[in-house]
Every structure is written in C-alpha cells, then in structure tokens.
Length: 321
Image (cartoon, rainbow, N blue to C red; front, side):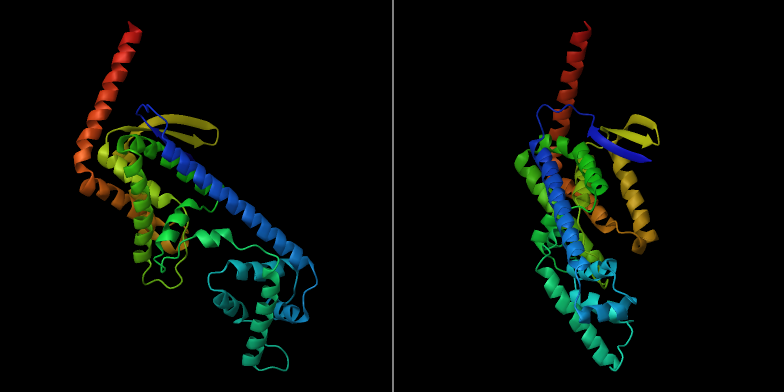
C-alpha cells in the first residue's frame, strides 16, 4: 500500500517558487548521482574485463577462490565507495587464504599491496563517487555536508516520496512565512536534523553516513502543525488497483508519522537503513522553532487563513446566486 499527503486544503494565491526550486534541485542532484553511478559502473566493467596483474589475481584467489569480472568489480568498486578504504581492505583479507611460502603477516602485507596497487590503476579510469562527496558522516559535524546531504537521495522512491511530502506542507508555509524566513528555516532544519543524528550515534562505532531530505520534511510537518494543527491535508492511498482520496487533520498526520518512527527507532533500529533519528530530530525542532521564534506569527497566520476561507466562501456563494 502506498500512502501520500499531496497538498494542504488551503488555496494558494501564488506559486511557491522556493518550494518548487528545492524540488527541482533535489531532482537535479539525483539525476547527476545516477549519471555518475552509471559512469562508475561502466568504467568498472571495462576495467575488469581486461587482464589483471598477477598479484591482483593471486589476491582475489586468496580472498574469493577465483577472479571473475564480478569479483574484480566487487573489490575495486567497494574500495572506491568505502568511507575507510584501509578498513575495507583489512576486512576482505582477514579471512583470506595464506599464500604459499609466506607467513600470515607477510601474506596479509602482500594482499594489501596487491589490492592497493591495482586500485590505483583503477582510479585512473573511474570518476569520483559523487554521492560519497555529498553525504554526511555523523562524526564529522560538517555543516556544509549537512546541507548537501539533504539534497542527495538513494533511489527514485526515496527522492519522490520526500518531495511529495515536502510539497504537501512546504508550499503553504512558504506563502505564510515569506521567502527569507522560509529559506532560513529549511537550512536550519537540515543542520539540526543531521545534528540529532550525530548525537544519536555518538557512541556507535562505524555509524552509517546519511543522505536525504527526510529530516527537513519532518521539520516542515512539525512547523505546519504548530501553525495550523486542524487544517486538513489532502491524501491519496493506492492499494493494488484501488485508489482513494481523503483528508486528514495536520496534527493527526504528523502525530501518526512521529509515532511510527518512535516505534521503529526503539524496536529494531539496527535492521533499518532509514534515519529515524533525523526524522524525529527534524520533527521536534520544526515544532520547537514555531514555539520559540514564531509564536506571535501564529495568530497572524490563522487570521490570514480565516480571511482566505471567508473570501472563498463568499466567492462560492456569489457563484451559486
């Protein structure tokens, strides 16, 4: 079953240009990621179809028992995309067969040297990994990477899901907050949600890097709920061949997703690649930004919404007459 909120039940009187620009930026970055991934994979296939040096063939045979193009790609592509290349190599040779005539230490040194030397040949033909240059390492506290990671995604379902959710809430917020405040809010949520992930993984060894706009999306949902908790959000559900459209109050939708993420975070977090910590961090800080910095604006926002509703009702009555 697929379930998506797609817009707030509020009339927009102008295009949400910044929201649309963010959508285009995420789609553009993801297209560049896919193009880069294709070039890397193509370069790896071409390289591994060639005859490999004897030292590399011996290393692959000691690790896997053979050297096929698939094994060659697995080793070299893995080294290319690994965060810690040395750790990747050490893990591969930890259980490798000891080469004949060498001690265990000498064999490990030979295998390490063989892999690294062939990898250096490989890097001449393969482009750098774009996604790796964008994602955020939780132990780095790199603010620029917090921002670039928010624009990158791992799959079409990842990017499209985030962008549909984003538009459902952000389009209205952009109209209400104005471009400057809205832009600052998006950047702040990207930094804060990734910061929460860093705190959550502070004592975790080898915490995974992260990409995606989800933390920002949850923050936008939280701020929208602070301003307009009872406003209906239009949604659609798709189950096999059945489609249904309906509306849900913002606070119900927001509370439901936060509750699900809390459950998943504390049930079996190690079995999921979803960054629930960033989701919850974004949700909490989104709502908190409203409470701390935008409390006075909430009354203005609700007045504007009420005025728009009255104008819409008046226009409808005039049409009926």
